[in-house]
Image 1 (cartoon, one colour):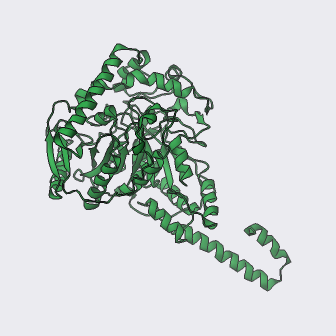
Image 2 (cartoon, helix red, strand yellow):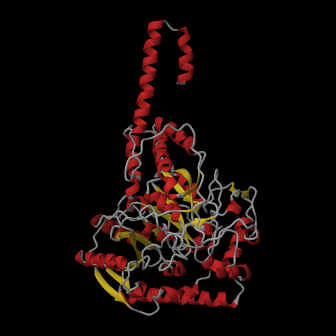
Image 3 (tube, rainbow, N blue to C red):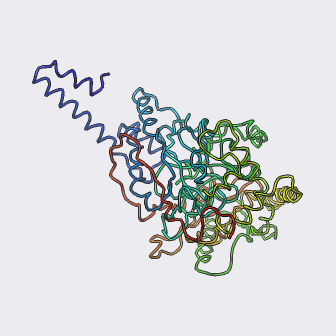
Length: 563
């Protein structure tokens, strides 16, 4: 088929009347394509919605990507959620349009725009951990889960900001600045995957990815009215992820609804066993190759036995805790109305602050980061050791982390206290399993955070409960359970989320529970400031992305590890 340029050139040899007819036809074709592309609205869009629009011929893949780019250009200056855009995203969309024209739309994620937390290796983008010293760190190989998503037809749209190096939950960094909560611009978006949380809440992509060493997939889901899954340890390879802890690191998706979450998990977990990540080699065969969309709506909530971990609440009334306690109380009442049997679990071991003593990040961080930075698949002008990164003065560590960082500099897995912590983790796994067996539980639940997500400039993201799953390696699905009362800063309130935790490799059961819950009690709301359709621009190339680092709170000085 001739291009419009070659066709127009051929008009030189055509009679005048025919010229007019052909020019008119070409104009109508171009107009039809543009109208078709403009008909797609990315606001709250879904995987199924993208596919339906493409197959109905009401848009193109280029149009889908353009619609998301328009929202990014409109709203990202307010929430500062992105570090970079993938310069090849529109080219990838055009390639998919060629496949679509040939009748090929295969792939679970065909033309689904995805945003990656900026600690995932993805060819064509840099992997920075939102650390200014690592701005030039360029991978030549995709993280296995990224390759799986591309193979399924996904378009990697760009990289999201995070709490620098994924070490805390405020989502502030030397390269990306401070990301803002889209529901309350005076608050943080949770973290460390806060850029992904804010971006997906504001419909910058269909879904995004995160990592989680303590709270980091669940905190942003809770704070941004989203759903997420922290999978069982080993289910998804962590090769090609800028790491913190071999023991505690996990990766997974964050989405606006459970069906999209299930598709994303299916694709990411399809990598299977990976010799580059030994944890994947311990996954039982029956936990491999699962399509998590199958059976997601089977059965009902009736008859489930769900435990409440009493030690994960803050029962002291305050403006920050009472909205969380009220939302959870309402949720428990709702679950009971659906025939769920609630079992109070009051064992003293379930205290998030107490079990945090088993956290092994400070022993493993330097070792795993040095290993990652020495990978032959990385190129670019960058430091290649922990000491070089933190000797560069191009980093941000919040004051609350100074002790952790200085301990990390001098600690290792050879320390006797590391072995003690690992024994504590093994004991915790035994205790958790016993709680499930003794009480005949299907799951346990608790608020992701005892209080509302903290304000910008706070010392730390206090009150989170993610440590139990992080240490035991069991799966968790996070769902919305409500909002705080509305206020001038939060027009529809601050989102509140709940964790649903299960035994190892019970992702299907947890997604089934979450699916029923979110359908029976739909609580997803678009942020008020971004709740409108953005007129799509004409994108011949990817727009430039420049994070705002001028908004870093003065409480977080750059380039220092001490007060």
